[in-house]
Picture 1 (tube, rainbow, N blue to C red):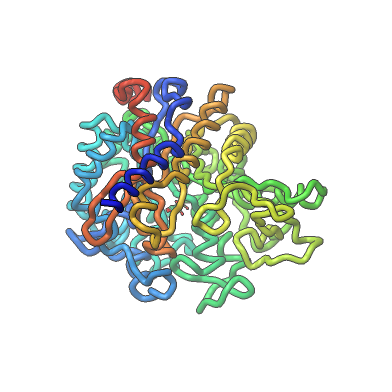
Picture 2: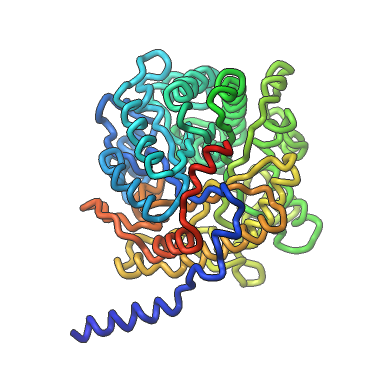
Length: 509
Ligand code: BGC
């Protein structure tokens, strides 16, 4: 009884502390603005060997190198979304989202790549999912590659290292456009190829686990060269797929196609010229690395100068292909961080920003850049969102932007009460959405926002030790429970006006 009273008092206190969605009004966003939640195939689907699915790079990596995953676990079952997708669509409907960002599992659709057959059970699964979404007025926003690919292609081409993967990706995308393009109006080619290539080929933390000292110890790899070779193939794969979509599908299907880039905002650690240049360099190695070739046909000057022969060159024919550009830019933004120059100061450069001769630092004079989150190096700094959106709008011809991911992490070993009463996440989402709302009112060319993630899921190298969901998932029972943030998002989305904009959206697109 005493415990129950204490619980009531605690919940009441949390309710007072928790910010409400008041003050942030969905109606202030332009009509047709997409509000959604995001997931990816390997992180949620499970059913890893069911209905003809082939092994993916992540299936093999987690099974053979479980030491690389914090809790030694894998995505064999994950959120069991493959079987529970109807419940998950119901959850989204309840939330009031008008869009859902998910990825297709390449290995489920084409278990052996282009040399094998198309798995019709996979087509049927995504058909059912898309139908269920549309039935509820939820627009599918589909990613083709979110870190997972058929293991056979990893073996055949060394993953993204071999130029042969470009034809494979082109074929895979074409199968998707043919099968789903009559109903899918938003496509993205690649999710965070900039982060992916660094984790896979520089830091050796994602399959195929390539790296070289000082970045790490792996059986093979060259951390100074391979990330750029893989990235080159990814950029050209993106270009070929966009070109195909524009030439053969866009006019009849009426959709748009973009790319999603991971973007931190880098703030100079001090106001010295060297740190200001370091922040500039870090952005260049993070954002311009992919978007400059896509929009301007070549790598940024900073990268060409610093990497010289380690950075591949585009032929004139490839430059012509790059003119397909992208209809929109997906921005995955989680944090801002200070950039410290490592050209003239001693630093730890065996890190994500190392090749740019930059060290990312969370504190200036002992004061953190924002409230820390459970993820090392990720802080709650809403102003960073405004700055990165401005940067992208200004540099890339005011191309429309969708915030394709933004979210907050918790450590799984917290109590269920703490995980559910995620005041920190509510504050985070409120801060970032307020910033986006004000940026949009001031003219920022932003058309949508997706919270990462709809539900707790398999967090790559962190396994299930970290949770990003606005829905809690009990991985033993697969029970989904809304967190305070899920309720907050629902209040925000449903509070101000009925969520029936999907029709308008479809008419617009
Ligand atoms: C990825 C997601 C991941 C999230 C949180 C992004 O880098 O696209 O797959 O779960 O960040 O780490």
